Image (cartoon, rainbow, N blue to C red; front, top):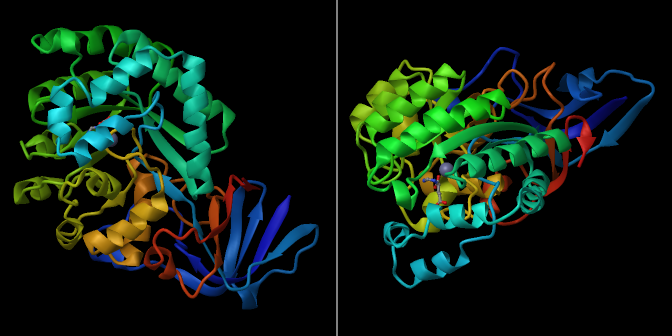
Length: 411
Ligand SMILES: N=CN[C@@H](CCC(=O)O)C(=O)O
Ligand SMILES: [Zn+2]
């Protein structure tokens, strides 16, 4: 089955094979072809170029997209979309003056979600979570990482990861699963951290590995959550089971956590709303990519990750949603890209690079996703007729997506 798109106004993010991420000043360049064609065979991109080189084809569905822009689907490398219920009351409490920290200290926050999750059946969690997955696919996301971390018990964590596995089996979108047992200390372990860390390492990890339920390991490395030393223990244990670290770090405070993540070969360090010059220095010449989550900053009113400083230092940057019930109840990558431009002063070219090819690097799928490249998955967003791709972040809040194709099929 072949599909040929013709008269594409702008075909964005065209790359040769073998480019896995874009750093520093290179991020300002978004390679594109004006007036282009794109050929897809089954679920793979097989050819593209200017219309003057458009091949003569037979037995092919031809779709004329005059005035419309085509780009690779978004790659959302950081989400928590498997959860039960919501935290709407905490949202109202914050409007009335309580901080995220104060709510967490009252037993709200992550522990509130963990209570709900442990009281909800696996089938019910699946039903609630699949609606969020379907929602983000409609919004142009073609690959997503999903974390556990609202179980915080052996059974709860396994339940979450089994739901992620079912989503992987039942949907065409690429999904990576991350084990985040180290998201918060349950109440009964508040005074006995080492016992909970033992539970993670000796009970949860072996069971998760035996069922092959996770691709990555995560921890919330933060003042009041997991210390640098505790996180190092967890990273090392995950690595023993073949799980590369992807770590929540520097969301509220800078405590030298990034250095520990880099030294332990983390694939990504995520949040980085607060960063020091030393943090950025250790990221240089490492394979660890920083990931910014601007919808989280927007929703809980914390600083935005200093994207300009990170990019101007020569580092790469990826953008993701952080979709979760507490700090970011939104999985809309279009909003993330617009907010990165508006609030973090990223150019549209930088933001789209960060939300596609660099997102693919941050979830370990850059060989197959993140760019319009021959041999990569046929995952594309087709916009409505627009003046140029700059309209995407400019008209923030307007849905400019006409169709989304994942693995060669319109969803
Ligand atoms: N910061 C840690 N974890 C999530 C929020 C968790 C929650 O509040 O439920 C985040 O990335 O923002
Ligand atoms: Zn998160």
